[in-house]
Length: 293
Image 1 (cartoon, rainbow, N blue to C red):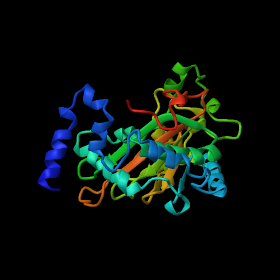
Image 2 (cartoon, rainbow, N blue to C red):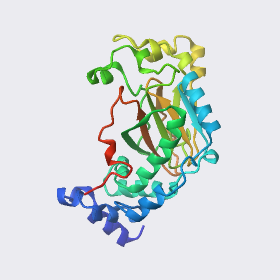
Image 3 (cartoon, rainbow, N blue to C red):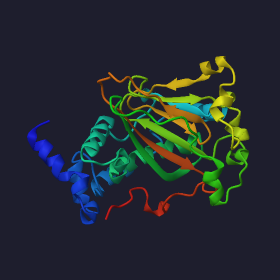
Image 4 (cartoon, helix red, strand yellow):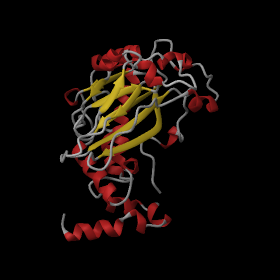
């Protein structure tokens, strides 16, 4: 990286900004000049794209079947036709990081919401859920960081304050599809070398539907026998591919190889829910491209 780039990123660093700057689309355009903010031409081009072209109905049907049977699923890049360029997005996340901003700030850009539109096409057919604006970015450099520890995305203490009954079984629809499903898109290759997602299948998890006891360890129940560890499923994903998982599946990102020197693992995830389970974080009227003013 040239000295001019280093100086530019230093001037744009989060630590040097104020509230006026943060509300300025122009500032964010400088941070990631290859992306768009409130760009009417870009937005019109995406909205003019033919609907239902991201993937096939058969692939969506396979995702739905696996979500019901196992609690997670995956799609390879060859089965997806995104409307955005993933290498450009991955480079933008790294630029955000150098400027002191978390990967989730990619959601300030039109490209993230173009991706959300793409993801919504798949999720509408695969799960029937709607986007709830739960968007999270991730970047794992194994020499510095690791993936997140084993967890479920939602527990009763998350949904009960919203008026949803404690019963875990009630957080699934009559057809067995979860009322909350996440699509996790790989902006770079994700493998055990740089951290990929791992899942414990539904059939190996006593607490998936029954719920977890307050004083119990869900993992201990999953691995009551030594051979149960064999059921852990690693899900390496090539750039442009994605995984899907329900709110109840236990999952984590492994710690990559410390000596790994390849690209970091970068991903962007989108949550999709039924409104009676988890209402959208802000009004869907702001879609398809929420404005930064």
